[in-house]
Length: 209
Image (cartoon, rainbow, N blue to C red; front, top):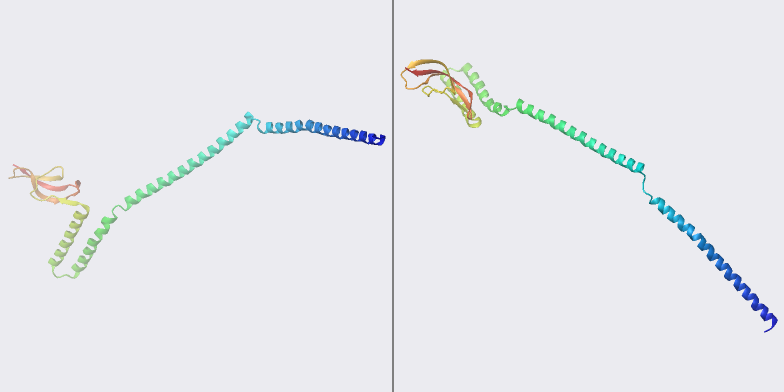
């Protein structure tokens, strides 16, 4: 091999050695920088997962309790308003029921009142008193029938009935030939609504001698 060839080979070896050293230096530098990056990431992760302080937890708990308290207060206010409205409606309904309890009865009585008006008008020019009396009797019969059949209002108290102090009010008596006390005169009929006495009959009683 000539001197020139030896010189060229030596130059190539030196060049290869320099390239190798440069690559090794770069790799070392990268390895040196990598831990710092990983350490930074680990630090950031540690900061993000760091437990909250007692003050932060207490503040969150207070905020939660305040929200729950506000919700409960709203519920109480709504229920109070609903109850007040219900109470007012109940009072009004009771008052209406009291004020208009007799509406149906009064409507049924209107027919009898109309008939009485017609009888009074007819009586002004009537020449037959019996016709007027018959008209009044018919009105009375219809009225009694309506009250008995529709409202269970029943009259009681007739001469000869046995005297019952629970339903009869004796306003006088006389000694007569009777085996037991009986009604001698009925001054005012009594009335029952179903089984309840709403007015006692006022009577004169015949007592045994």
